[in-house]
Length: 323
Image (cartoon, rainbow, N blue to C red):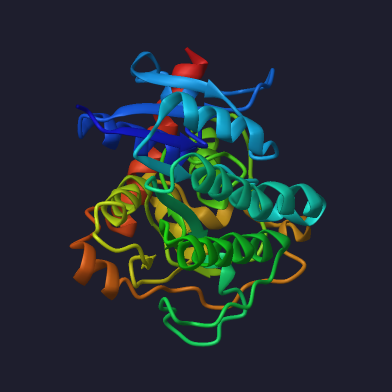
């Protein structure tokens, strides 16, 4: 019998890569989507006919219970959330409802329907925020600096609480920034690589950015979803930092991206205060030693390869749109 898995947020960047991975592993994959006129299936279009799409919402626990009863998955990956930090300042309550309380609803549905289900929670490096130590490990104290980060801290701790209170196999992956050609255009990595592609094609004259000195630990999303799967294959649930252990500035991202298109970034990049955060996080850089030792996880794509991949994909995308 094939294993069955449910992915919330299946239409997102991570959901699409995870669905591919699980299908390759022989799983029957179900993906939860909200009933909406604006759902974008672009990221899963190439595998959509192999996924069972079910309607549900993190705001509605009854819908989660009904989905679990219908599908009877052995594994649940909770990737759905309001996941854009900047938006969380404008929609803090919605962010809390989905990114924080939504985790509780899924966990409670699991506890109610089948406590043997193995559960993965997508935690975030944004929980560390004003970092208390560098690099950050699983035991580093949290100090979130955005409504998104605060909501992720709640989701993380309620996962630990349900694990300890109800003996659930519930694990959290504290994932640092992970990018890909499937990243949304609102995220700075994709904003930069897509902007470079449009500038190279003569479709725009400049690229407006915020803090070029901001530093992040950036990896490739397809590498990171492999860590999610590995967590649920362990005998015991636990929490793991998934990161590269390296940090790079937005300026480095910009330099590499423009260089990949043979352009001089200084001719095109302009500073725009609208893109500055009300409170910036400090030096986010994770230590993946535990994930490497316990899970046997490693990354395959480094930062320069990631940027090159994204620029090439966006240049191809812009050319196809022009054609």
